[in-house]
Image (cartoon, rainbow, N blue to C red; front, side, top):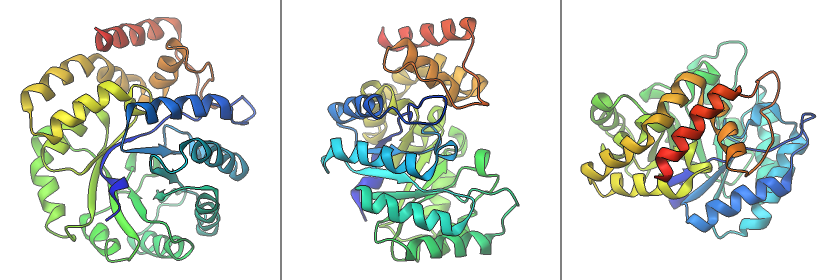
Length: 297
């Protein structure tokens, strides 16, 4: 099982102009921070990377910029979700040609999809590439929820190596994780997103944390993850207390809006989220600044 689907996968923003043209210099600066912090992988063009708002050409430019800097030193996992199966196949081929090490596939939909439709979508994309593929289970954006049975069925495909699940509430993490683990091969990696619940999911046995905040603040995020990987519940609780103001804002305002504001406050990029998403106003930016100070303190 590729090690890229274990540990901290940090998902940066994709800074772009209002017309959708990616600022590759700013993107590389964000990726440099992640590499310097020694994250376990970089997750490019995930939801935080606003992949759904970018053209095929701009997605490829982003991959080429990130892979050109990383040069294989840190695994690069690239999102290739698209409404149409043939488009997702093209994006997978582009990602492989541009230097990606692994793929992340969400079943993006307008018409609600059946499990069989999603299964066949994955089969088709898997046939278009040699790269290992991670299932992207993100019901909040795709409006499709992977059942454990579907994940187990997909895990039988040779290059489907991992799943990125939304982390359940802490009280449910152990049971939910063990329930899925019992149905799939031991080599198949179970990772989690949803930053505010991810550490508990790793404590419960999760293999990876696919992190929004890790794409912006990799060093404290790694400290929280390493504590969870070590089973140090006390250290996890200490770091969770420092992250809590940020988690509260993520849940209230959305993690995407908050990280754009945080990136601006940290002078990492002044890019704004793609319209129709609007940037946070001054009062909310002040709350984000206070949450960042809590972490820095």
